[in-house]
Image (cartoon, rainbow, N blue to C red; front, side, top):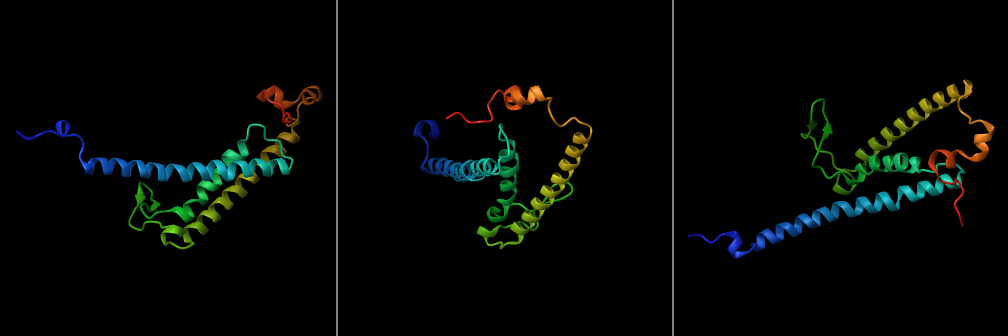
Length: 163
């Protein structure tokens, strides 16, 4: 009768595979977590504060700056495992490699152009919508609600940080 894995305990190969899988998870999570949480979001919040733009819930840094960073990060970090998106499924016949994986600046340039095009297009659409709302008189609050503060009324927080 052959001894089972349970009676012998885990093999060294299984332990190494588990440790390597854990290392892969950590290696994927830590840079993503650090780069998303430490780089675009806090810098985006500081930029909006410096420009005196009111964003009490942090939508622009989270969706705008972190979204752009997520798009641009493909340029240096594309590992060559996947190709461009095809009409039905990914086309893996020509995998994309980023700057740190020997692919040069080609992917990064494409991501910069794409991010810039989307940013300009969305700014134009948002500007048209805001100008239309302003022309219809629907953009501003009534004076009494404005004095109370939209941030307190809608979000339950003050626009001025307490010291």
